[in-house]
Image (cartoon, rainbow, N blue to C red; front, side, top):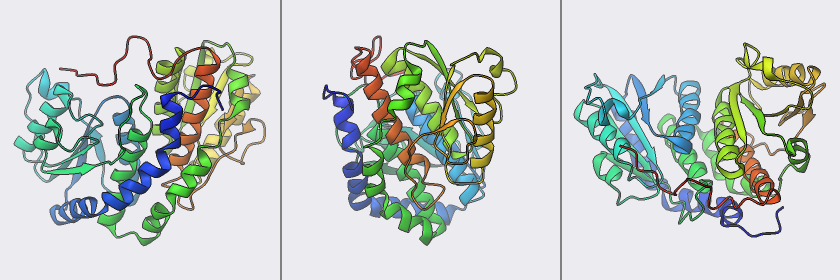
Length: 343
């Protein structure tokens, strides 16, 4: 762990408490939203978000498609804010995600979805925000104040609020039981900061992150965090796509970080990790199904749909420690503000 107590490190440590608060104080509102979604019986779901919030939507996309059989598509906010287009959204559910709830383009797109016939939901850390006002249902993620520019607990609680709604909607008792046990699992995950991966990255300027299915969202989030907290170029790929061109830039000691859950995609991610390792890359992955790449310690939740969540918590601990080891303050990334209000 880093010696400097950054705001980011403090907020990573607060994740289990923030999750417990969401499950305690937010459960009834999420249950009401799930009831509304069940009554509406939408044909599909659309999401509206940017940055880390959009990565939470990628996680919810796979969770919805695997758990509820409902396809999910992301709508670019510019469709409404810049292009002023109308969409055919009857019998559609719209989920907009924004920790601040203030970005004008997200709010404009949520309003347009409501206008065009969608049943609208806002996932936000600010229930008094314009996004909440623009949506029929608001899910307060109850993350508490987040002062570091780098989103951590707001990302985790956004993803959890969404999958809790899905679990309540589908009345999935096994998933609900695993969700209730999640705070303890996340506390365990926050104690892992992957020094072996940090050492392998070293002074490199570029790396890959990998995922597949629900863990692709964590790979996307990890690549973003490397850029914003470490000024390090990182590209996220599905393990199914990295061998279709991107592999060409892999050379000896090229760092690769793979996110695998205990699900049907685990073997495929392990296979790709081993293949990249045989090409000379320094590959680390959160699975024991490896023959060549190195396994990272990880926490499993007892439910494959939740396994990605402790993985990103351990990653947050790792990237915070790596940033501070390079003399970079992850709380104040250059050129960035906490709230980015895109038109």
